[in-house]
Image 1 (cartoon, rainbow, N blue to C red):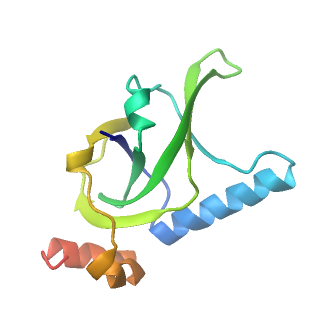
Image 2 (spheres, helix red, strand yellow):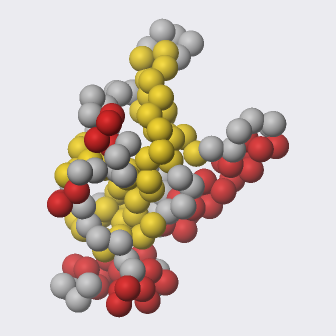
Length: 145
């Protein structure tokens, strides 16, 4: 069964802003002649790599709520120029909105069991994916989503 990660999306005010940052970063890498893949660098290397790579995603917390996810396609530990162990989480660039769920601030990343992960905004809730993030948050807080 897949295991997920959850992390704060620092600096992003919305899913759209996060998606714009991804597009910009991929374009920059392509312009530099590098492989345009989305990588998120983190200090700690997950110990449960095989479970994460078995269909796991990185769930992003935006403005206090789990708001979206990206599938994890690889985990690459490395040592930076200062000799510090780090890790690249390689992600599919597609951002999938999920049903928002409150989450308190934390540092780093946390494991998220598959049964605890919020479902994608699909099917009968497809229209909710088109709503502004703030409206989705308010509807979730009111118990209407």
